[in-house]
Image (cartoon, rainbow, N blue to C red):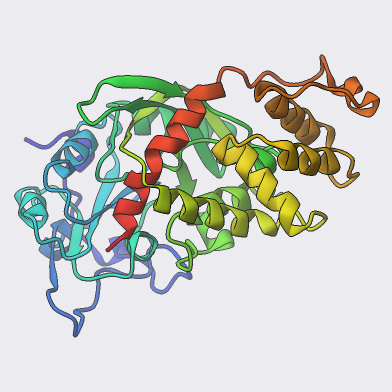
Length: 372
C-alpha cells in the first residue's frame, strides 16, 4: 500500500497546471519525440494530478537517471517512505538500456509521471523535470542517493517557519555498500561561498518554484558545475532568503576518481567563479580553484592568494576563509598585513581533509551521470 504522501488526489480542471509558466510546471507531459525510444507513464496519465493543500504545500521530487538499475529502487523507496504527505514524484530517464525502465514501471502506480527518452545530459534532464513540476518546492534526488524518512517534513517546516525561498541541510556521505564515510555539514550561505564553493550538497536542497522562476533553468552548457552556478545565483540574489536544517536528511553515495573528470570539474568551477571574481586575473583564479577545490599548495598558489588577500574587493569574511585554508595547507604567516586576520579566522578545520576526500570521491560519480 502506498504511503500518505503518494495517495491519489482526484483530478479536476482546476487541479491541472497553469500553462505556461516560464520555468516550472508549464508541461503536463512530455511531447512524443521523433527520436526513439519514447516511453511515458504514471498517475497523471491516469487522471490524477496533485496540488497544494492548506498548510501542506506540494513538493515535487525529481529523479533523473540513466542506466542505474541496481541503485534506482533505493531512491524511489525513500520517496515513498516520506512522512510528509503532499509529494509528487517525477522520474526522468535518459533511455536506459540496463533494465532501469522496468524498475520505474514497477512503481508507475505511485510515480506521478515518468518519461524515458534520449536527452542531452543530466542538466537537460533536470530542466525537463522542472518544466513538469507542479510543486511549490522542488527537490532534485539523484538516482544513487536517498532521503531519510522525515527529510521533506523537516525541510518544509523550516521553509514555512522562515518564509524562505530555499533550504539546505547536512548529509551522510556513504560508500557504495552504504557504510558511513563522513558527515558533510552545512557551509556558508553568504559571500564566503564565492571563495569556498557549494554551501551544501545540491541534493539536500528544496528550492521554491518562485526562486526558479527568478533564477531560471540549470545552465546546460555545463556538464558538472551547473548546480554550483545555481547555488551561487541564489546566494547572491538579494531577493532570495535561505534557511538551514541542522541535521542530515540525505545520503550521498561516493564513488571513485578519474583524473580526466577532475580536470573537467576544475575547469567548469573556474568558469562559474569567473563571474564573481572580476578583479583577479586568470592565474589568480586558477590558484583559487586549485587551493579551494583541489587542495593544491605551492609557491605560485601562495603568491596568487596573497595578492587576492590584498584586494579591497574581498570582504573580511572571505579573506578569513582563504587565509585559514592556506594555514591548513602549511602556510606560515610572515606578512604583517595578514596577521590581523589571525585569531579572527572562522574555524573550517572540521571540513579539512574530509571535505578534500569528499571532492576527490564524488567527481567520477558526477561525471558518470553526465556521460550520456
